[in-house]
Length: 302
Image 1: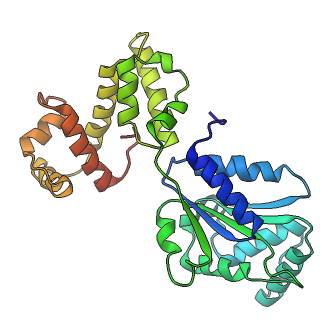
Image 2 (image 1 turned 180 degrees about the vertical axis):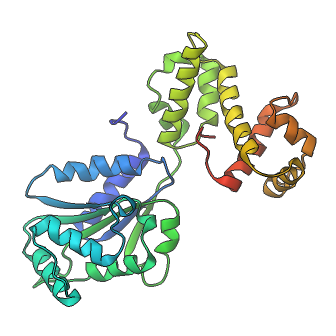
Image 3 (image 1 turned 60 degrees about the horizontal axis):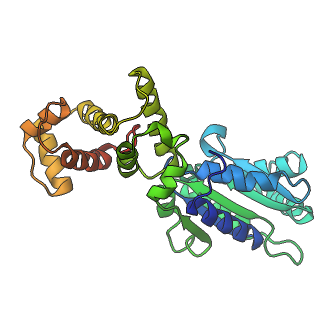
């Protein structure tokens, strides 16, 4: 589904190109599965293919162990010039300034999973971005991609004015439908229910669609039915509830605190075991809100 261009994609593309055009610092923020890596690959990857015009330094803190400003400086020096970074910090800063200033390409530092960067590293990036050379007051651009916690990390008085942010929004039902490979596998009611109940991110839609298609195949059915869709999402919630090491009484109390609606421990027990005979749609909503707040999004997107 690489050609799907949602409003998030189009907004992020404009935001990234604008940030690069002014050699600024930009942060694309969205929850896991919202499409940040796809956007990074499509937008910045396309620039990387323009040899000579752009130089991309691609960093992922967790996988590469590049988490402090010294390591990031070293990565920039090596990627752009092939030189070994100087050991003395001031000499390394002058080396980096020279390399950035002499480069004939637009330099872009792209950092994935930027929420894992320490606050001191983010401050170091700001100071690094302030390096000038000759008549140039900005030598490169920085694009951060991170989960919602990144927003808080760059919200202080020092960083907020320099770090422009783009908050990714939820997919609309129409956009969700773009990530379904074969709509004909659903009955009409099943598709409508699927689009209402699936979490509003590309990864959630794709994962739920693939797992439901597998369920349909295992059951030797031609179509994904509304019942199958409801069972799929209800099962995901029940599995998450069962995995909590809490009594039914405590779960009932916490559900009331989370949702404002009173529910009995017996009802929680019946629902968790799949034996509840009442309005499952209402309980699915209450339980999903509780599970989301307690443990975060679960694998079968709610």
